[in-house]
Image 1 (tube, rainbow over the protein chains, first blue to last red):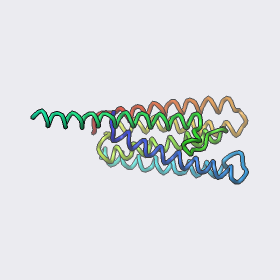
Image 2 (cartoon, rainbow over the protein chains, first blue to last red):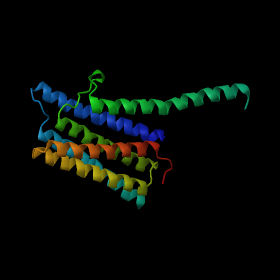
Image 3 (cartoon, one colour):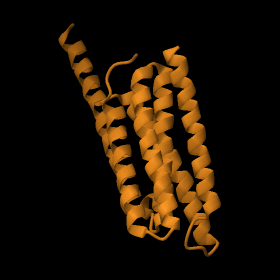
Image 4 (cartoon, each protein chain N blue to C red):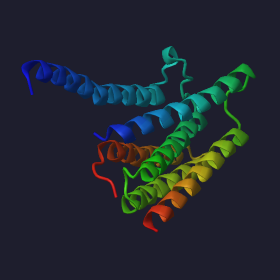
Length: 63
Length: 135
């Protein structure tokens, strides 16, 4: 096991799960059964940003 | 190395071996909380399709961010990270397709795409955790 990567993955998963859990809790608190399309759009936007950051890191590593 | 030093070294090594076990247990708990919903951990369960989809997108983002950190730290080569990104892109395409299909009313088709995307993400997480060797 690569402890450094596993720990990083654990932290990132924890942050993402907490963020989405908060969105679901907010929907329930507002009396909605579902999170909104806008919520999912925001999650997808974060994912696009994460992809762009990874691509930049790869380009830099490959040189 | 004296017997005392060896004893201390041995005790420290035992402590180090507990770290991966802790990580495996933690990741298992996180995975279970996504699948079944673990309110005892203060997390909201994913009861609806859109909630399951949201958690899957979040897992995808976590994989991308962990990979980025690994590349920046030199723990993962650019070539290996490119392969991770390629599989992650396939997973993302499946997630996007699942979202699109769900809005058209094909619940079974959407669920199938989501399960496939989740399977790829699980494999990527396993790969990242067990990867050895840097650039």
